Length: 285
Figure 1 (cartoon, helix red, strand yellow):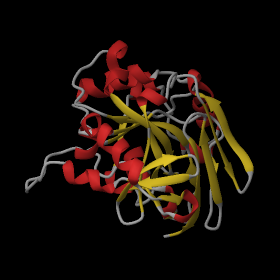
Figure 2: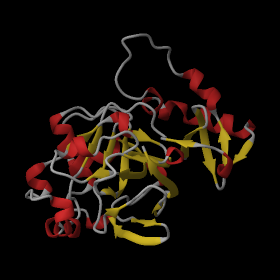
Figure 3: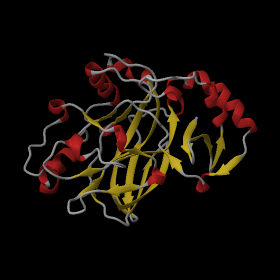
């Protein structure tokens, strides 16, 4: 199942080059009042909603994907968890390039652990990226994104993928500079998620998937998730040892070598085998 959020917060089921509007199933979610619970209620109820989504899709009118505005498939994550330098060649690249390391020692992920990105950075591909600090280098980083489906507290790596609802393409946009990662990576629109979420049952072998990105048609990054330093299960185990992961939380698994700058007017095309591709335009904030 490929689920998207589109236009004015509509829920869609993607099939081929079309999207089926299944928004009426959202009415099945329990009514909520302030203070609202943390996490994404749609992702939390996804297993229960699946048969209703399929039923609604059978009577829905199909719309061309090319005619809709794709939002982030996750509306309300409580956290965006990120894995720094989780590909060996990217670690080597970061240490060798002063434009990346800014005279700071780039440590292995086993030493520095994970970091958080502001949820306010989250957008879908149609929103594009609005660059801040144009006097600095702003880089693209393509990554496999995991969406947590149920609460995960101190889970073991061997069981961790059972807690994943689905997968998407993630862009961890970065302002280069001396500040801490979380600050430089949390600007508005600096986390692009999309183009939809592929449910875990349809995305087998997540640790053997090709991912890539081009900028204005020029190849920049191309790798396979089998080259991750810390695997997906280990990342979930590490994150959930510090805090409970909630439905809708997003885990960006790390980016490979080839990161590079983008500027206003550039067009990024990111793809992951088994998910699809998304086009993201770059502009000045």
